[in-house]
Length: 121
Image 1 (cartoon, rainbow, N blue to C red):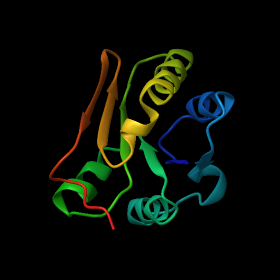
Image 2 (image 1 turned 135 degrees about the vertical axis):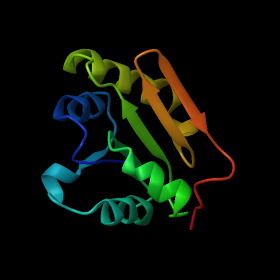
Image 3 (image 1 turned 90 degrees about the horizontal axis):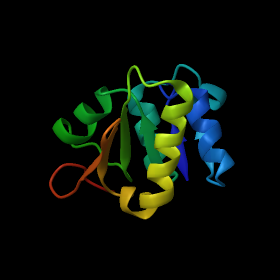
Image 4 (image 1 turned 60 degrees about the horizontal axis):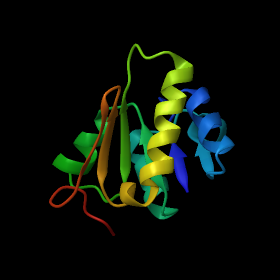
């Protein structure tokens, strides 16, 4: 399961749903939730958190908040359709690898950070 933060564009959410992934979208279910509440909801439901908000890196790495995996989109300036394709491709190719890590998706690729950092509860 994926929990998409409000910072994620609807085109990305729809692209992920179109390839058969279960995606809950904060903009549809809990509009205005705090970052802490969103991260906790993702952890509680065993979901990978999908976001474009760098504040989640602060919560996970500096504050040691538990997560089941965070995917940070750094795709500013990328057209919506291309952004949706990039994210869908990343999940299709690396879905299981994204769990329990902190992944950054950029126009040129992605990197998954493991080890010290996110603590899982």
